[in-house]
Image: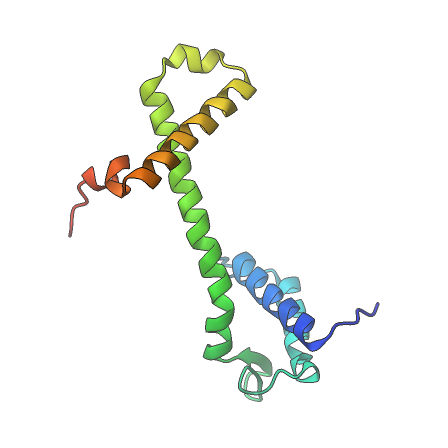
Length: 150
C-alpha cells in the first residue's frame, strides 16, 4: 500500500506515531513491539520528507533512529496540552460528583433515570462554571484543603 504525504503531513504522522507509542509503551514492562516497529519505520523515512539530523538521526551503535531533545520537546507540547485539559475535566468531574452527593438525597439519586442524572450533572457543572467565572478558585473551595508538606 502507498500513502502519498507531503512533508508537513509526514511530520504530523511521525509526531502522532511517536506520541501514540509513548502513551502505549512508555509505562509497560513488556513493550508492544509492533508499535515500536512502526515508529522506527517512520523515523527511518524522516530524511526523505525533509526532516534533518537536527531533529532525527540514526545511531550506528544501537542501530536505531533517535529524535533530538528539541524535536521531542516540540512534540511533547501536544501531550502537555492534552494532559492539562484532561486534568481540568477530571477535576471538574470530581467536584460536580461531590457536590451532587453532598446536596442530594442518596435514595433520590439512586432512583434517577440516566437522563435525569445527566441533566443534574450538566446543571451542576454550569453552576460551577458560572461561579468560577464570577469569582476565582477560592469560590469552589479548593484552597480550603490542607496539604501536608513532608
